[in-house]
Length: 284
Length: 279
Image (cartoon, rainbow over all chains, first blue to last red; front, side, top):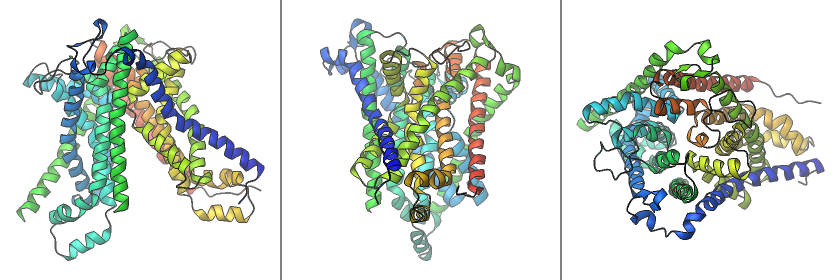
């Protein structure tokens, strides 16, 4: 169908807006590159790994303590939140009576909306002193992991719930007619069928944990060091940016942009993997 | 049999623990935050670095940042969504490209948006640390959510509307304005509220874009402290700021709940509204 003149004008306007929206991501990348360029230009990438320490004012740019802090806190949070989140989804879908399931889902949705700064604040005022009593100082990798777990649990629970809901009813009827027990049905039929969706949700949650700034910044203690135990204070890559951007200049500032660029790449990798998983699901 | 019972117990236990922890968190904030919360607290300016006084200017700054973000992001996202769902084929190359780049944008961590906002809006465009910079940064951040929800809303409108309108010889623009947008309105508003919720909750992207200044902003080019930044600052940088931080956190959660319930009730009203064709 051919378009009228007014429609053509509208379409042109819409195209303009859409291209602007699509170009935004390039603009973000461009400016991250532009700001990190001064450092990338005269410092070999390897120095971000094998310099002796992170003292950007003296030209030492070792990022590995921050990288490992980010890695351990994300790993810990995902390892805790994945089973809890999946169990939560199973609870509201197969175990809870319907009114309770509704309440529980509402609760999880409410939690998904709580700002990260509130989680961080609660972790700092309530959780950290408790852990401090066990093993001072309290602001530690462990506190960071626990707060991150709370933050990403709703993501995992809600995506797992959606994936379980999408399992064809015929599978459930088939399993029921075979006389499978409830756990037999879940472990043998629904979880394998929902696996791609559940995994994609976990990937997204991991991306959120890596990119999270405020909550870990507030509870992890922010000492630049390689963590040796769960009770050590650590500083993640995101926290490092938030803490030092305020006064960083020159190469120091550029180094912070490099770490932002690195963060973006890791998260994009995870988003891409989650995307692949969900495509796989569509083809099955 | 044993396995079945064991997993049932474990799953109930998980649900109990998860709800327990969350009830703990929420009640903690309500118990500590409620006593200080009053109209005076909402209206007064912070005193003594926020230890006493209220959060009046901070609420004004937060709302201004939100306003800037939504005023910029809403038309842009609506236009993009309309293009994607009404003016391109679902699997066209360009449509896929736009969608993919928005997916990528949705995955960018908020601190990276903060870096970008600082480099682009504050320094490159010369807006400085201002409500405008912060709002525009948030606009970039919420754009993918707004587009995604608006697109889903438009796609959910029945194809009968489009066919009937085409049969009546209505132009695409008229169909859009009189039929598709009104019937997708609940989804559009719900999406808008999701975006507002995400923007209100944001901290990391604002620290280096809208700044820290806690006095009443004079204009959009003035620096203003958002509520979430205020909570962060009180708990991390101000010794003895915890009581006011609790009250501000409670206020932030209440604000989010209010936004959500407005979205819900609006969506319900729109759902019951009949579509009227204007002559």
